Image (tube, rainbow over all chains, first blue to last red):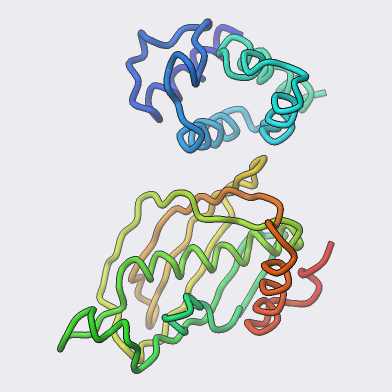
Length: 93
Length: 156
């Protein structure tokens, strides 16, 4: 998780030109960091490449739109990293 | 090419969804109203249309990979380089390689060459969404057949 967070924070800092020190595990990518949907595609591409996964963004969006989960589940970075770890583990299994 | 209709690709020369690559032939017309303004006395294919050519070539690849189940819309152009002028009557070869088939998006690297010399290249990102209506999907299938996308790649 900690190394996942370091990787994700580095990607966000570089991709979105956000100072690294402003990015914490409690940061909400949209509400706190101001990342818009297009920039998030860049972030998603870099994360997919870095971890060799395909984040199910469409399923996550559907879950949020249907009220199954709040955006915190996927956009608070600590939660995002936990989801990435699960995807990496599922791929390795 | 029919510039006024944004039809940049004349013919798909090679398409391999497994290898995630595509090549296309594109002939710049001898005359077009576009050249009257770009530029008077010095007609050149606009750079934005060179990028559009790369985007459409990669778009056919994404459509084929997805068997025309969804539609890619251009949302981002990165690292675009326009390396040489392209003039009326010039023959171009466009090619693209799918870098990533993401969830709801796709990224390709593409280029245009003429006589073996690269004249433009760019990385293109598409948002990939369900077709907004049947009219567009039917038109895309019709155009796909016109530019010789193999029939096997038109359906799931």
